[in-house]
Image: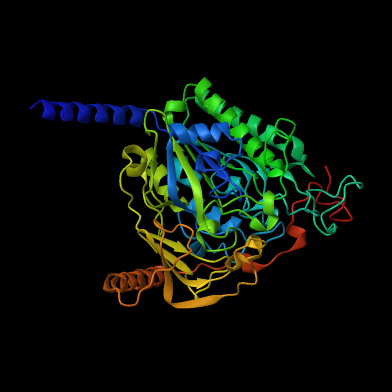
Length: 504
């Protein structure tokens, strides 16, 4: 009887908590690092990373060990995060979008921001968009459900020079300076605020913008969604005065520290405004580290290869969920993905899901109860997916099967020859199968011959593959639409000669 009464009391308490949350919808802060690997944070085992705020989230929140993005490069990964759909459905393939790309994330795709808007949420995006600019900015965040945007519409290395700028003239480029490319712009909503952007002041501007957005929303008692896709730690790294030279890892560590400082400012603002206990903060990364940059490219820890590949190092990411009073500190080994963020946020907010084929599942049971995942399978597409080849790899439970393997330029320079660009496309029939719990480094493929249980596993994997591929309808490729230099953002569109006159 006492046990029953205890459970009854807990049940009533949970109902009361639910009612409180229903009266005050939760806020969401989504932090998305760039090219940050599984082994780059101190909480994931790196010995010299200086990330006290991210480490705090890991210590006081839920840390994932088996969390995946959907692509080993930027644009498709971001499309999946915001839509809950594989990039093959939305058409963000092959590769990534560029300043003059004609295409972008289709406007009929529904983003997290658009899911939340009907419920009265304030929505803002700061940082790296990389889902298209298009004709007259038609693909910008403000066209995709975000009330506010401060950031760069594509990757910060897509200016004339790989060391960020060709100006002033005495700054030498890495390689040559492409004078046919506009300098990197900073946009506020749909207006270019600065071109070229001042990278040494950029993170300060982002931090101020984000904290003001949180403060304003909290004062209005308006629920909010803040999406912060950072430029850090994508090459080439940069850092302002608050972080430059202050880490133990050189330029990469400084960039990571600057990102962490902004995370700290956001946490302080959530505490100061009194909304931290009603806010889910979720952190992860878009894809694995660019190992070709060596010490300036990030670290995938014990995982194989990195960016550009469908090995674990290319697509398994650190992930942390933090919500004081709702999420208990701990570690989960459950399978989860960026695809699952949209349906989870929709479920917590009480929002309607888009009436399209979603690939994500609700993670609330994992977050709130550290329970089981609804996800059994993860699909691995290469940077250039096609209907002819289909998926490259598939994870089912703890097992991963590679039907094709290939290295990548992004992961060259590592001692592992499988990672190099010279490791050409290789089909595997039967597929290479790894037990990721025993062998997360994918070093030792299982021997199938003479093992009925593994033969049964192989048949199940093939069935799952066939069922998934039968359900996949490839959307029109937005990236294959090509580029038009006249579409690249210019703060002085009538000026001449372009692009050298695009300076404001």
